[in-house]
Length: 238
Image (cartoon, rainbow, N blue to C red; front, side, top):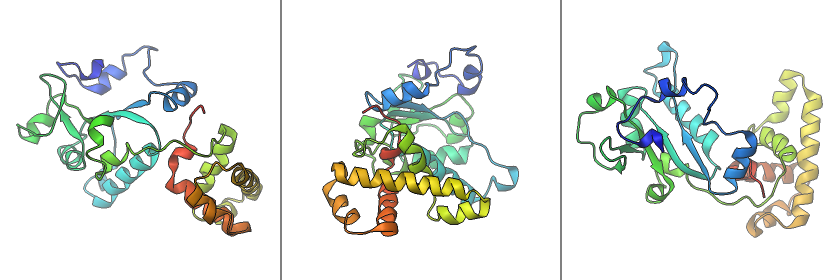
């Protein structure tokens, strides 16, 4: 990967000079890669309002959102850089490794002050192989992956994803006045979930729980399962 080949360079300026040769995959390419060899993810930058830059809650929310957006994909490698010395330190403490500017390999130890590292082009990240020993960290947890059991089509994933993202979706619909969308999503999830139960695609332990309930409770069980298994709602060609 050119990004990791010494001498290192700043990601941002290079990405703005691509002139149409974007490394961003199309939806079809993401679907194919996520079902095949896996995906590489490059984190360009994160930003805060200056009023919240020192807020621990803001940083925690950002990390939680990042994990929520990336869990469930078959990741091969995750690469990024520190947007501040504090963020760089936090990322390293959270399981990421620093890329050596000498040989382009991830290293465990930091041999220079973080302020000095931050002032020059640098990269932090993790490969799938290295992550297996760091699963208990939040960066390592992004590489936890189980093949989806539902085999949802894209048209089925969309309403299920919207439903699983909110614990009280119906209440939210009432607040926005979009009751028609609410009913449509409820119907889509309910009908497809019942078909999936009959198909036997849900793991046995989940089937026992899901099929023992009726109506709203069964649907609730399904949505809990989907929140705990984000791979079911990620694009993949099965």
